[in-house]
Image (cartoon, rainbow, N blue to C red; front, side, top):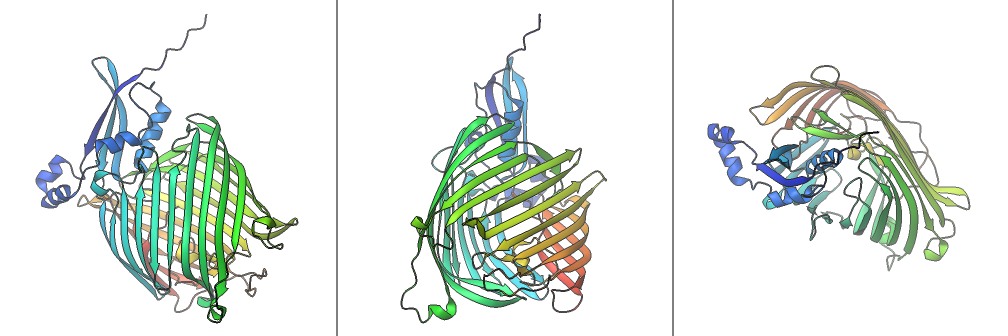
Length: 514
């Protein structure tokens, strides 16, 4: 007779141990640590409990405990998170230990690459009064425009699982606002989600070719969207979800030369509706010193599949030449091994009008990372993508998105086609310098670019513009901050086409995250 499996023990209580940025010993030895702890408000225990996916009275589930630890790290307010179990008077207790990261960050940034200079000034608070709420106020100067950003993000607005995000951008040539609110699929086993989002904009759209502004347009937009999802099957390790979505928008583009003579701005209204499925087998790999220093990072190595179709009928505002059906598909495949992984991603979407593609986007990427050599992270990354008839301003700009060769100037690689190969070896020099920062070196090789292909969008076709660089970057990142963003000082020898100036280039910017 087969032995029956024992029922999982029940979690009797949850113990939260929430520590400040510096521990008691560091605080006793360092004046700076005492000042930092005195100014910082430790994350409240109630906030930590609300992020957990387990509660007192639940059967112990190791998968949900691991996912709870991941959910706490995703709040981006802790430098360390640890969940384990203990016995108190024979009862099972879940112990949650967190160490806060320094969350108040003055923004004093300077970036230069290929003779293009940008700077910013502002303040970001990632853990306002210990609530895991983010506030942002930043002024950013670029060669194109000046932008003042005000942002707000709460992971538990009004209720435990409701997320609210809002961003207002006051530009020197327009204004733009985004918002999103709702309950996402906050865990793998979640059964439902409901999200609404929107945008309002009156702005100038810049379009670039060969590093210069080739065309500008005025854009007026108001967009409202709603997506609802239902878990047809969901466990702690895999899911199958059905989703429905709809969007209403007003969006118009007018060439700046025509905007002056027009008595009134055009007004076009559009509506779309969609349905699709998502399937996933969830798995994460926890690595250290991958994109940051002195912290555990969750790398998504899940097997994922997404399929959807959107209807854009003529009756809902689309011209006869643009009305149709919009299919979309994406897939992620991963192969992990101890201290390394390979991830392949591919995606395609577009609008079919009478069976003929109108606007489309196709992309693919492969990332291979290994930490099998001591104190080194070797990364090989390749990606490519193509656009057909994109909206004005949605063309590829590798300087803005930071997914192209570094040590090149602003807008030197723009277009409707792009490709990028990066090989980088991140060598750890020191993980804790003065207990505040990590330092590393990274020899790198970059090759790629972006260019235009004539597709009826008003651009002339051009040969592939490709450039590359080989060089060395100094990587410096905080170890006590809530977010471990690394700053990169890169020097490289440039070759190929697509750049102005001499062969040597310098880039000071946020480090690339793969």
